[in-house]
Image (cartoon, rainbow, N blue to C red; front, side, top):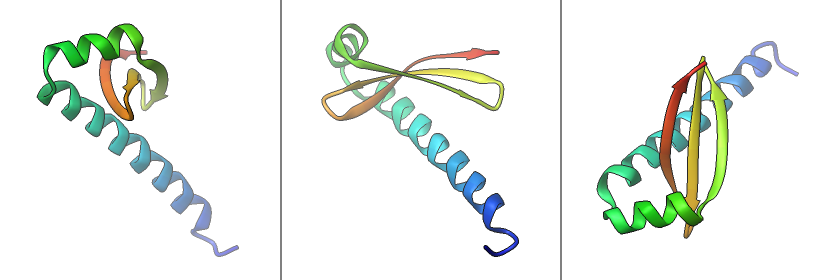
Amino acid sequence: MPRGEPMKHLADEHAEIGRLVLAANLNFKIRPLRTILAAFLFGRRERIEHLGRRFSIAHWRGLPYLMSIREL
């Protein structure tokens, strides 16, 4: 394994979480209120702890929606 390989893996993992949170935030901002309510009430929940924050993301019909951000 090359010397920088473990660090590259961590950077990819951080970037993937960042992309998910950004996409979820964008969907929350641009979708109609009824879609956000459906995601809140019926969506599959995912909770991610990353860089001192806890993100709650609801997945509804294949799209992520950012429900909350909390400091740890």
